[in-house]
Length: 206
Image (cartoon, rainbow, N blue to C red; front, side, top):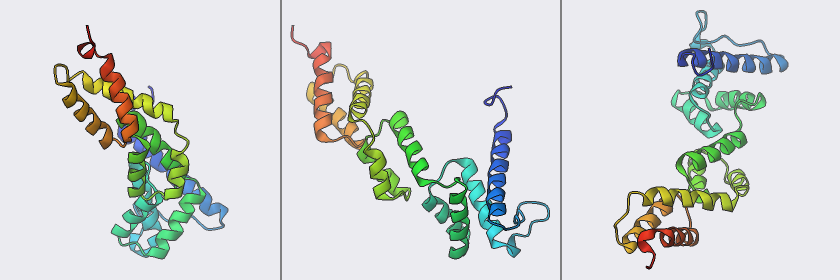
């Protein structure tokens, strides 16, 4: 049976167990005995705020990658004391389970491929996720402008398939609005849209 054929619950359980094992390993290397799991049969959530915080972070990470700020906010919502949250998140960073750089890299790839977002739009979303502006900018600087431009061409070509018969001015305005919402600058949008419309048979001169 392949990885994708196994039930989602089983995959989630395995990932959660892996996260727990990694945290236990870093605690052992630090000379601390593993703390009880507050979700386990003998765990006492009220007696160990660190265990509660760790369980909250583990549950957050089993759903999807998270930035440190997102995890901090989740702990705050659960009433976790600030000093406990800081200690737990520091340990997760030590073991590599909280890594804003890796999170931002994956986020950039996902937003480019899935939604066709340009660097400007991705930058705004990373800021909202709590990723440091300097870190985000350094990673976004690595994005090839030609790759971004190629993605803009793909977006325009796809949109144009549903716009045949409309006036060129209308097409230009709608395409420009679409690219602007995805973070593309005016200069890039203008060139890409002009090239796409000039190539359309309905806009070519006889």
